[in-house]
Image 1: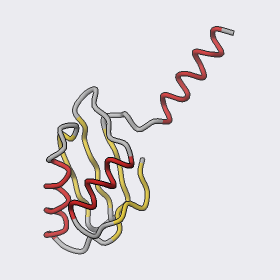
Image 2 (image 1 turned 180 degrees about the horizontal axis):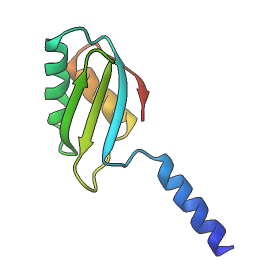
Image 3 (image 1 turned 90 degrees about the vertical axis):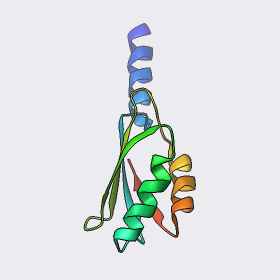
Length: 91
């Protein structure tokens, strides 16, 4: 029974996005200014160490500080501050 509980706990922990990287598909990004505004918005969050925006793939990759996390709700609020962009997928 104990092993089953541990396995369930480890599985559930793997489902939450508390890893050191968060990858998002974002719609509405069209230019370098979009990338800069998104970068500025996310770099203002203390959990975020680095922001990588790929306009060709409509992707934003966040590298988080060790031990930090960022959930989808937090990311959506930061994205609203950046402009009229929409997170289509959050991993």
